[in-house]
Image 1 (cartoon, helix red, strand yellow):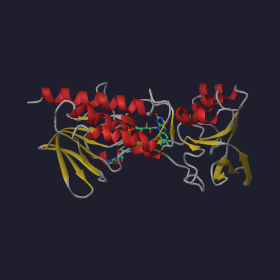
Image 2 (cartoon, rainbow, N blue to C red):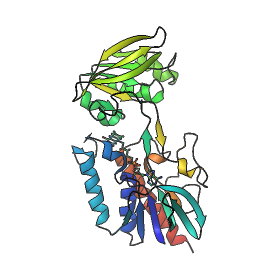
Image 3 (cartoon, helix red, strand yellow):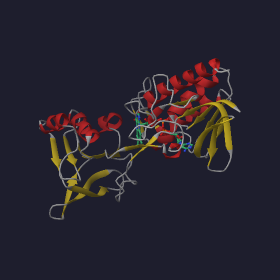
Image 4 (cartoon, helix red, strand yellow):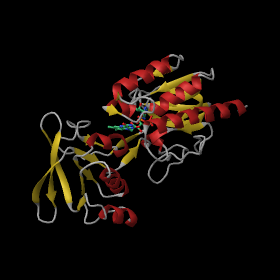
Length: 305
Ligand code: FAD
């Protein structure tokens, strides 16, 4: 059995693995895809102390760093259940079971996608999901934000200070964001809000995004917007489906509830990164919480009989 088993190989899992292994305890890391969301990222400009890097390069560095410590990395394996038995068991989809004295859950999250033509093709080439990450790439240009909930309107207000023009497209009859955010967005001269707009396609020139098309649901008319960027803000889904039947408490959004040391409601089980209820989903924040969870798990182990 392991002393610490980490489920997930993104920035949170990698940081947790390094912090745990540096304590000299038996550390394993199981991941469906090492690198997580970072593998899908092109330019990264907010990884502190590194002014510019790219996703696959950062992942290669993460992996090299984890491997310095002899962490047992189990790749391309999906966890499907978590339970307490003799220790804590993580059951894999392959049928195998891993046992550990403590577990750190770092399975991340995924942005809900539009599922329209062009979205996959132009991901990272104009189609973006994170305004904190990619807003500055569109300085002085025209962008759209899809989604009129809190995250969409926050994104529009944030982007309005950087880009030339922001068009918010909301599917429903009215925005769903808090009134104070709506009021703020409506007060900004370079923010336009279009309701009852169903985005139908992302349009590009083969290299990058040039616009989008949408259907006006009032009269079924087709419209085109010329844009350099499209921020999709229709939800972030934590990867916790496999924990539904476990003893780990999830929030109403499906996020794992943790305390300031990363401890969950299940003894010996910690969590870190985008899968938790820690606000602001970012690489540096995930790494910090991964470090906290590993130190939390170590504190737990030294007190355990
Ligand atoms: P993830 O990166 O989501 O990693 C989750 C890990 O868990 C993966 O290894 C996955 O395979 C694994 N996993 C999931 N379910 C299971 C399971 N059941 N069993 C086993 N393994 C499982 N942040 C920034 O700070 N700067 C940026 O510029 C930036 N740009 C971004 C661009 C894009 C396109 C996206 C999608 C995100 C971006 N982010 C950026 C956000 C950042 O990538 C995330 O905050 C960060 O990756 C979260 O790390 P994590 O380790 O918590 O989860």
